Length: 562
Image (cartoon, rainbow, N blue to C red; front, side, top):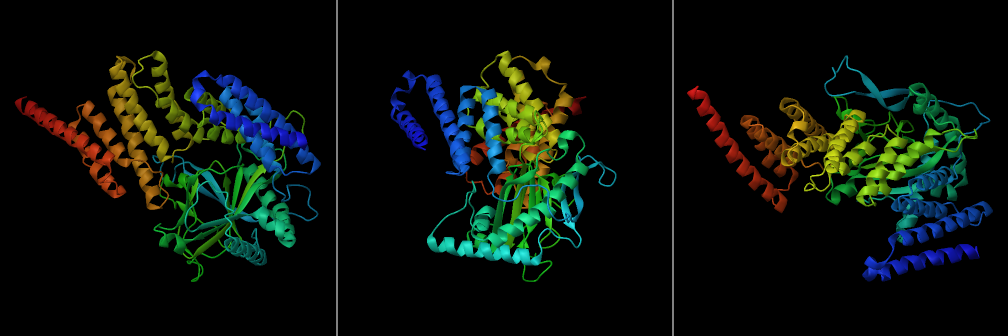
């Protein structure tokens, strides 16, 4: 423990020296600094591990240390070492919770019946005969995950926690984003003060939740990699969430909600704990889980469990949002599942590859561009099914020095376009990916014309069709997200401007004008009409409209002469 304290003191001194030496940053050897920090963190991780094994410290400090070490190794460009650390970090996540993991139970499992919520593969598919894919499962029938008495016990314990925390002025939330009307408490914290609740949750996990997830996703999985992990399922984290629509509205929001996101772990289990107003006059209004995948086609984008105690279960890579609860209180319990390391020597467990990709993404965004690209490619190799990775890779490949005429820069732009194409194939409902793909087509075209590479572009008709399809799809999907209160924040005015600009370059003035005329309306709908960027955009549109009107008139005159 003395050695551990000495190590932590050294880390603090390193941080202080880093701050104090900013003036002489040019003279410092950054590589040597990072190597020293990595050595210190490795020693700290060894000591933290020993402290956990001896039972004198919890797992959280070790997880924080491994997180910092993984980031440091990526900054050094030592990615193989970083992967080893990330595996250890992920393993910490699998043993962090004190809740029961999957094992042999004394009682027979009681697996609820379920149905699959499905989405169309793409918007071009026929609604009736088109191919569909599973998005999430919803439990149905008499057997619920949580019985009424379980729900009552859980809500009572949570109520006491919220009252005690408010009285003490304690903010216990560990959410990255905080919103008015949202409250949450970790299930482990509730179980720590109520052994009866802990025993009941453990029983529900072992007899219902784990058997349900393993059975349903084994049946659903196509390849071996899609099937549940070999190691025993366990709780990565679990949160009791309270959405208060009235508080959110009083704060000027449309309701209590969460933005579009992916979860940590492998599977998410969302359990309803109270009635919707459609089922009970005293329940909440709005709310539910908005699934991005369901914006393709005309199916309901927002889904809720059948009744209190029932659940919706989905893979954590499925992008979703908490739709706004517009009045009343909506209580849910979200359980994030991962898996422990299997006891089979040398097994290449897909759990760790999923975790690697998830954890590499936020690390990548903190790195300089060259290492960022390498880090995202590493994430893509580890989980080629996660659409977020090629999306961010494509965005960052295209965002670069547009004044660099080199073949390397041209290759980055082309690779970025291909990466965004892959993102739209993996997730056809991602409005962001379609938007950036369309913008990528436009960027590629402008760059090629400026650097004399026009001969490397696709034929004009094919290029136009690709750009139009990408941006019009983005606009259509984003409007559906916006209607549900779960928008991505895409600048639709910029999409219409890009469409108008591209059509004008192809001398298709009528189409260009049709797109340009929608820019001002999009800015007004977003409430941005007084912003400086909006005024500058409208000035640009005015000039382009004048150019297109003039060009259209000249084409008409030429046609009349013929």
